[in-house]
Image (cartoon, rainbow over the protein chains, first blue to last red):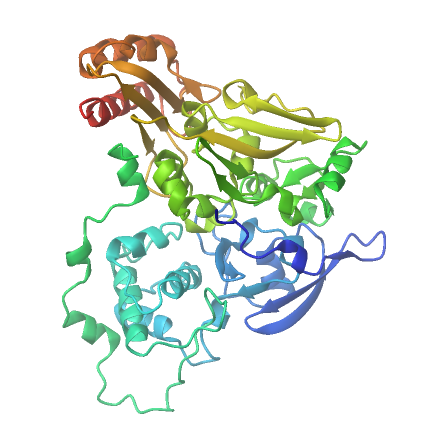
Length: 239
Length: 288
């Protein structure tokens, strides 16, 4: 038997009701590795808490109904649509937004790959795409996800510009690059924020870009294409 | 609409008993788990409820237990947990398949099986699976507990046989009997993140002569509730499935009267329902 508990909610400090009449709760969160405290209405959307109370405007609102993925963030390392999460359920939890994937102006490996491959065009879907892709890579340490796996993982993130292929290529290139220099995941962190050297610490001159490397390499998807998902198996009537 | 969110209250019970007491009280709160349906209504301004019961802290509603004959899933079990559960994938492949086709990852990480049942949509992706497997819903109130077959639990369009003080705590899904094979198929506008135009779960077992000994055909998005295509099942029962296919398909058309709506129309739905039945019979009925 496997228990389904990811993190017992009882361990989290409980939201306490603010003085009667204010209709607010005080929440303590860890956002992108930093402790934060906010006093907000309990059903305020996590997206609005991030954008309005914490001034983290990287996460976007596209549809407000969990269809587009522009508001994707990680909650305790798990990908969620922040437009569908009430603030009160975030008390005591870790939130990672797109702002947590880089270091100020320095881009992370994944972000750089999006730039190099043209995976970021108009930019509205990009923060959510990056967070969802980050969750995929973090869940597969040292392994480059297959093309189909990337498409499955990003299926909830809609993009109107790229036709998706450039995004898929960027994600796989970033996974390849991180696999070559695996960053040490923190214990228990399913999707810890990227920790990589800022440009300048090491000369990048003469190094091939992720895109250049990918162009010179055969796709791993060729070898593994045709592997089945549970849905495929069910369609074939396996039991 | 957004501003309205700031006026909503949330009750946060620490135990199931506290939750049930809140539901039995005068000002009944609306239970919220993953919020993937409720927040759609809240964001759209179509939900008038002002008070919510956050189930997130209730350990009693969590956990997956797979026994020799059935699997019991706590109401707060997410579709990700179902999708990633190795034993469930083996023993209840149709449920794992349905879980992997609900929305996309971010939705699967939050949406719960209990919520899918409680939302009582005719298009809920896991619901035909529950129907085809003769699942049992566990509900509790301060008055006591009861178990009710899913087929009689979902009584009408967004209506359940659930009293206002009752909470769905778990669902038990019998494992398919030896020799019974199952099949799941969702048809939407795109593969992920779409609401079903037609969703189907079938189960079939053949006797030694290749005749149908057990069959369940369960459809979603074809009626006000998920529905068993009992007339088509009757055509298949006792016959070789491929030989009975045409009659079963015709019976489907007699029994099911899907509607035209924003997602699809009646003609398309009927054609797809028949095609999916045919796919099921050909994939499963020809193997033994």
